[in-house]
Amino acid sequence: MVLSRYYRLMKSDDYSHSAALLERVGRLLTTEAHAEGLLPVHWEALRYLQHANRFSMTAAALTTYLGLTKGTVSQTLKALETKGLVKKRVNSKDRRSNTLSLTAKGRKLLSRDPLISTVHALERLGSSQHSALADGLEALLSARLAAQDRQAFGQCRDCRYFARQHADGQPHYCQLLKEPIATSEASAICFEQIPA
Ligand code: SF4
Image (cartoon, rainbow, N blue to C red; front, top):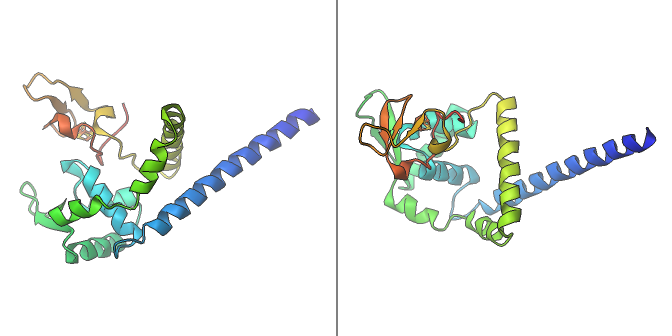
């Protein structure tokens, strides 16, 4: 009885330690993201636009993804537009909304993304350690997002609406939005994604 209580306490300490490690990693990433005259939120928006699919390139989807206020995201986009890193154009299918995209300057800047040093550190972990870490982080992120009733923004190829090799002649097809999906888009993230 006493022993099992001891093990429960040990486990709880382990989980607290993991949470503290995540917090420290998060702090390191935030500190590094004050780079190239940008703020961490600017980099997050640029990365989102680099990885989002064509249905998700809007200020509204970016706001949901970041979990920030509309005003903060609007200021962020204004700063990125002023720096010539992002451009806005009227959506040809719905003239009341705008579509966002990265400019050539924005794409070039992302080749100096401060997150790259963390990518290199992950590469050095080795494949089995990295794979266990990636699985754990994915499970944690999805549990935390679900607890806050927030969207997953997962990859298209893992979505319940993704039809592989659809018979309409296109490589793939979105059964929700009724649109073809190119193979190059299958790994992009989407605001409508629901895990399969
Ligand atoms: S299949 Fe899912 S993730 Fe892909 S575009 Fe459709 S809704 Fe989005």
